[in-house]
Image (cartoon, rainbow, N blue to C red):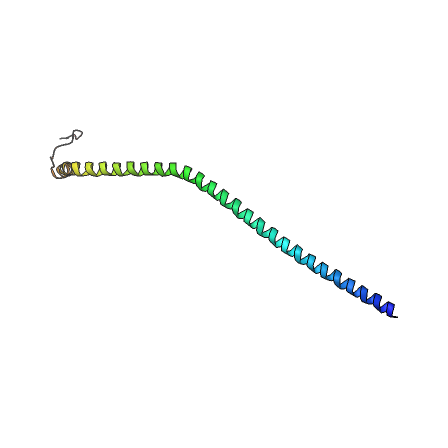
Length: 118
């Protein structure tokens, strides 16, 4: 009987050691998975930063040239508005005189197509 109880005790101890080893292996696996996940996230972040930097460089190259075009167009528009404004101020008086003289100075005369029938 003692040998049976000793055998059972040994089996229980072996089962307990196996269970402990299994739990320890699960913990190591969990740690390794967590570590792998952190490494993957770090690698993804590094890749994302690298791609964003490349994108910003390309965007700067493209938008920089568009920025120059935008500045040139703005400058041309300002110059055109300035020319039109100066032309307006220069010719306003003479045009008002012409307009008023055309409206107010009436010379009554018979139209050339008018036929006087007597």
